[in-house]
Image 1 (spheres, each protein chain N blue to C red):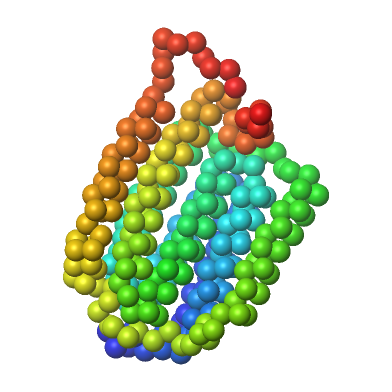
Image 2: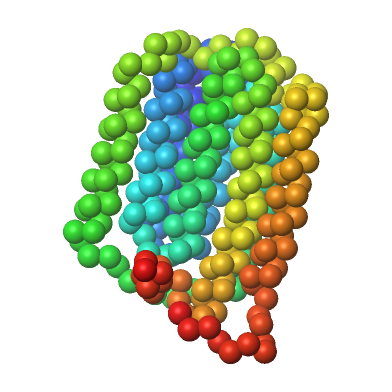
Length: 170
Length: 109
């Protein structure tokens, strides 16, 4: 039980560091640590498939993509202009009000304080999820492949330089 | 396997909801606070992940595998979104030589 609270503390701590780090590279490294704590959460809930997928897709693919983009953009100088203090204060207050609203809406939830019991221990295993995925969710699975293909084509199309046309003015 | 199942035995569901809410709010705060487009993007990833964690907690609580399949679809969607979004950021950087989103405030009208 105390493992959950320790890992939850680490998740919150690292996610605060993500948004407060000055250097974007440090931000990405803290985000990797945050996602690692999420993987530990999935393992604690015995969702093994999601733990592995989270580890591979998020920590392996997405954050490497972030690091590559940052390397491509080459922002090793800390060039981010700071926002004025009032805007920062407004941002913090706004997010805090959102947090309070969401937490207070928890008050009227009925069974929210029930303990999380693992009813079916092999719920999150690959075998079980694979059966559900390929029986009930076969069409969304295939549609998501089209989504990934179109995203790939779109990303290549957006990121390639077009040499003939004049430079767009933004 | 049983020892792992016993570790979460006494954690109430609303502590998971609380954790996800806090991380979601941190993501919102990051979007509002920062001006670097990549950091804003990372905050969006943080929000997506907190929702994933909550969906998994609900799925375990109900004993229903559909929630975890849904998380899998969200991860596929996040991968597509990151690819397109980072391509857009690269294009913006190529055109304006900065990734400060205030440069783009002319997109407002």
